[in-house]
Length: 605
Ligand code: FEO
Ligand code: CA
Ligand code: CA
Ligand code: CA
Image 1 (cartoon, rainbow, N blue to C red):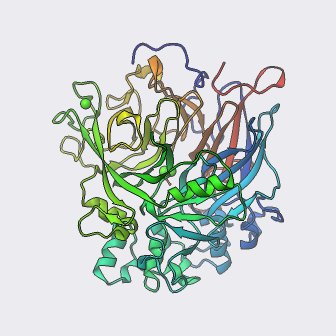
Image 2 (image 1 turned 90 degrees about the vertical axis):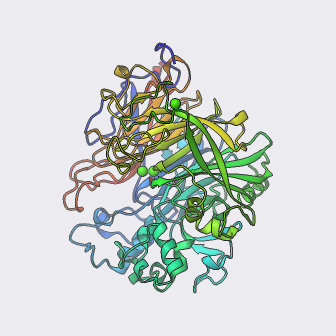
Image 3 (image 1 turned 90 degrees about the horizontal axis):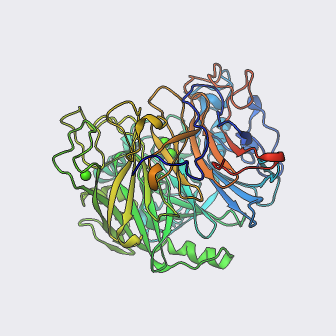
């Protein structure tokens, strides 16, 4: 990194200052519009949303709750007609029903069924207005809700496993629904991968499982206690581990949805392993195979990679989609170990080592390939279903909550958001390493690596921290060597995306600096490398998800606005509808106002 230069294409805008407004705040010269809100119509026949009179039948046709991942799949060369694919990570029942209707200790069956229907994904056709700039959803045969009642096909080496069989599904190959879908990725063949993340929270009675092996496996994945928070076990025994212990193993996978075919059966890909998948993103290897990167988002968990056996067929035809999807069912699953090159210098202060960087080399340790296990004491089937337990045996690096991981399509490097970890211990004696150098890491960091030879199939790589996030005025932050007095404060990186120029865009969740979460851009090459600028901020209590950045449009998902309030009777946010309205998780489009009413280009003056 040298001296700051001219603004880089894609990031030439006036940074939004940190703030606590109950609004989406965007740069001067930009405009915004809500694309779709919780409760808006998705499928034909969806009734008009009525907060006080919601039903499960209505919710099953309407946009779900707590939008997270956003995929925008163009259906024409100009990106006018698109398929918008959105995850609905979880439900916040105390905000979904009027305070006098919802008793958390005794939800009604209808309220529980509303929650099942508010999970999953939405597929909606959406048109970009080439003059006005906004993205607008339309009624369309592509529109589809996927909920906890949608049948999924289990594929790959653990399909039909004894660990996946339940009384409702003795085949171990058919699961109803997907849940806690956090981030995801659009595949080169035009489908969407989505990560099932914190699935443990939905299950009751882990404490009643007495078999010591089964109990230890449940514990490793965070399943605990007696009654669940949402009490779903009262209305379907599959949520009761005392009755259906294997139902737990049917979640925690990467799922694939084909939005191009509304009649397609979604897939759970077991070859990608089972853990708290934040997301899944693909890079094609030098010899044409498919590599998938995925983080396990919990403190001290690992980063994984899958490399397919078969080769990718370019194209998006039904034939290519079928062929490429099947590649995700046979390959090698690896876990990452990061080794620093400044041993003895990581003292817990966040101070840079003498070589000027937190950096080093790393390797991908194989766990299983097809039906062969590389882990002592584990069958291949066990590696895939109990991936965390298997990975524990091979000394991977325990990371500070690996969230989104994505390859940069311009420079070929891989970028991972490590959102935070406040539990490495007191400063000075902490359990730190060069890849996770701060003991009380409240603000997170961003990791960058080069696979050896630029090949996603390589088992060796070199890495460095691009950002050590936080208040740039504090000594324990680092912005790729860029002068710190010029950057926006950034905290808790979660989702990452790239614009056409290869700039990294980062959305945040859990800002620990006293202002709201938002979306930030940062060039990764040249003299502007590390120049973090805030592009937008989100309303009270919300995290910023998505994001999608094209030449003409930025999309973000505003998840859980008003979540800091105890119940729906006293919301702290009234976004997006204003007045005294209930807050509603929503997708927002942002565009640059150009001359003569034309749309400008994002980040280009
Ligand atoms: Fe659902 Fe890892 O954030
Ligand atoms: Ca170093
Ligand atoms: Ca996330
Ligand atoms: Ca998060």
